[in-house]
Length: 134
Image (cartoon, rainbow, N blue to C red):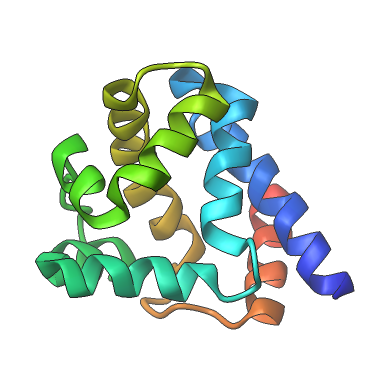
C-alpha cells in the first residue's frame, strides 16, 4: 500500500510536468486516477485500448519508437461516455476538451512509464517514477 501511494504521488508529479500546458495539476490528478486508482489501472487502461482495436497505438506508446497519435474521438470510444463526462466534470470543461486533453497526454505519459518497452509492476513503476523525478 505504501508503494502504491508513492507511485500515485510520483505519477501526479510527472503528469503535472509532462502536461503543464494541457491543464496542469487538475489533469494530472485525473490521469493519475485513470492509471493507478486501484494499483493495476495502467494495465487495465492499456487493455481497454487494445480491446477497442487500438493495439497498434498502444504498442507505439509502450515500445521504443515514436508514439502514434491518439484522437479525442478514439478516447471517447474506448473510455466511454461516463468516464469522459467524469473527467470533464473534474476539469471543469467540456467533454470534447477533456477527451482532447487526454488524447494529448496519455501517449506521452504511457511512454514515460514504459521506457523498456513493457508495462511495469507497481514496485518497478514506483522506482521508475522516482528516477524520472531526479
